[in-house]
Image (cartoon, rainbow, N blue to C red; front, top):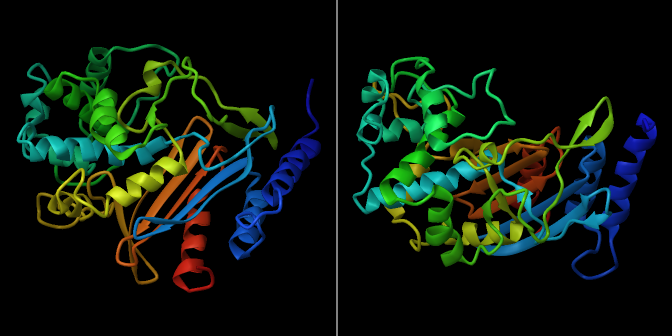
Length: 362
């Protein structure tokens, strides 16, 4: 049965407003941030949103708005699980840097060290260039079948058959395949699937109990549904194969509750030395000594917004759009997780950050 477009759109917006108002409590009372978030969700037709604001690793606000599952009318809460999209790249980069600190990976290592049978051009590609998107790698080809299961060997063969877009180190071009390859490097070096390595070395030590590799087969408490708009109607996310949902380019489940723990850890040296973190948050240079045009470090974009230095990343995958923005000098972090493919969480994150930076809210 075809749903009336206007009715569907109205129903989503109405649901957002009703749930966001929520039961009366000290934590839920209307304020400027709530008013803005609700209005933006209605404008963008976002079913559900989770917002984290922290300062110096201390949570100022962890709040859910709207619905995690429209069909079951389940509200978003701080523990609600969203898909990461490319926000997950920072965890892959952190894992690589852990292995660099341990001397098991070298940033200047040629990729052929880990893939001896790879194309000759990979001799010029380094781990550093993969981390910073300056290796000449491209993205998934147009004929890539998202509904087919692949082995790691299959994936590397596909990547290897794609010619480099430019000589390594000479340009910047965002590449999911570069980070997919890094995940397989982690597996080769440690003998563990990269997701298991993340679990043992990052998620468990930090108490990120819900964060994990995507699995639609497993029972995952608090998992939200991803949505997309098709001619104004809300639809469920499109299905992809299990192995397409596991590469290291951004295939995680997480919540703002867990990301608060991640953010707090980044103020410490619990995971990485300060020098390694600073390297991740510094724009990587090309072979000519100039900073790359993407303003990219290792797993993070480095930007300046209204005079404030920001390290950040966005994510998009299977009906989810996400954003993490860390105003490093201000010690302010804003995370916005949404379950709509057309959502613009960066718009929300930027505005909320400015509200806090301007002292409009505390």
